[in-house]
Amino acid sequence: MIKLKNIAFLLASLLLLTNCAKRGTITGGDKDTIAPKIVSSYPENFSTNFKGNEIKINFDELIKVKNINKQLIISPPMKKQPVIIPQGSASKFISIKILDTLQDNTTYSFNFGQSITDNNEGNPYSQFKYVFSTGSYVDSLTVVGKVKDAFYQKPDNFVSIMLYDAKTFTDSTVYKETPLYVTNTLDSLKVFSLENLKEGTYKMVAMKDKSSNNIYNPSIDKIGFLDYTITLPTSDMFELELFEEKKPFKADKPSQESNNKLFLGYEGDFKNSKITASYDNKEVPIRITKFPEKNKDSVQIFYPNIKMDSLQISITNGLYSKTFTSKLKDLKESDTLKIEKKSGSILPFRDAFVIKSKTPIVSIDESKITLRNKDSVAIKFTSKHIEFDEEIVFDFKKDEEEKYTIELLPGAIKDFYDTENDSLKYNFSTKQLSDYGNLKINLSNVKRFPFIIELLDKNEVLYKTTSTKETSIYFETIEPKLYTLRIIFDDNANNEWDTGDYLAKKQAEEIIYFPKLIDVRANWDVEQDFILD
Image 1 (cartoon, rainbow, N blue to C red):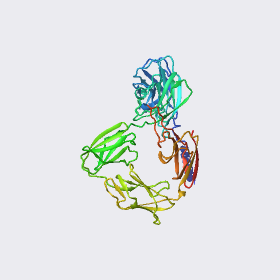
Image 2 (image 1 turned 120 degrees about the horizontal axis):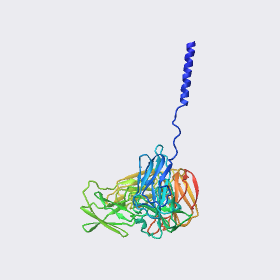
Image 3 (image 1 turned 135 degrees about the vertical axis):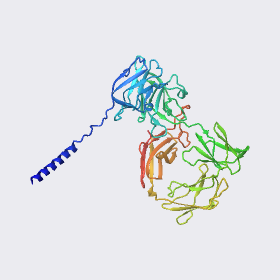
Image 4 (image 1 turned 90 degrees about the vertical axis):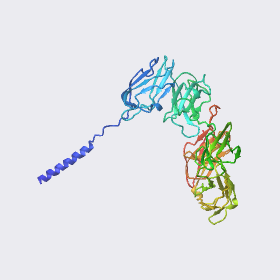
């Protein structure tokens, strides 16, 4: 019994020690969340009468400098970028070697953004700025504002805001000269603050500067501008709206894709283009259709099945005029008539039934087309041929929970190559009206007419209408989902949004977004007030 008691006591003691050990596990302490600190710098921050070419900043712990090319903002900009070490490796200091010739009586600032972090945990020394002056004092004026995008609801990151001397500024300045002062919204801010500025008059420009050279390149950059001069000091807050200018029309050399089709790529607006073709000094009949891929700036050029070794393609668009000679090869493939259904198996009440052709259509014989419901009763319809898209749109009165069949007899459609369709049959149906929702938008503070109102899902426009006087807008039988709502003031009444033009000093047409998503549910009637502030 004594031995058993001793064994039980020993086991109990071991279990107690085990539990105590679990409670006393070493965790390594709290996570370091403190950013590194500067212990000294030479010359000191905000020094005056700066004459040297090197700056050294010492920290209380090992730091890393990351993504310096994107994060560091130097104002005024330097033509020769300074050498900054270390980059990527750990160190207790930062060395800045200035390679540029500094201007007299000028305040310089180096804003490091989020590029300085401690070595272990990556805690950033956020928005650290080193400032010095080559004169006897440091400029101290500030101007603040925010940026927005003219078209999209959210602006880009890394937008540069620039100030130019108003006395020497001309329209061409942004294309060839760097600004006096510059700052950047970096990767998280939509507001900006230009600091350490001199008193004076300035022109303000914002730019999504993809080349990071502080020079405007309209082919790749966005720009925003104030069309007036600002005077410092000021307590005003400024807003700049960035837009991407419409590119001048330019065509690429056509490429042969089949024995009867060329592809033509382009930049700019194709809408007013005229394309003709010739061979051996004789005009060749062609048909132009939209390239089938979405968001592709290309068109298809269909030409006859006749023997030609080349084809001259002439394109005009406003002042643009160009002629290309395309050598034609004998390829295995030729485009032939092929009709496909574009609409889905469920046809929404707001939509028409659409079929699409692979080759250009020249005639439609409605007498060879029938539309019937599930009881085989013929339904009246109208058809419309959209040439550029090569679509045939069938419109008719729809009933709830109905099944439809549309039949095309042989010869109903004839294409550019005198090919006729074989027998075609498509089935589709409708749902109940209660499967859809209705939305009424009540607008107030409408500045002007006409305007366009759009409902979007992930930047795709699903529903659109215009108004020339009404401020209550209805969208009936729409798909249940969360919608983004926006208003476009269509100032030139062309039923589309128009971007800005920097040289013409024209801002983009104004867009106002409703600040929240609108939830439209099945069998709901939603009424939403929208104050256009």
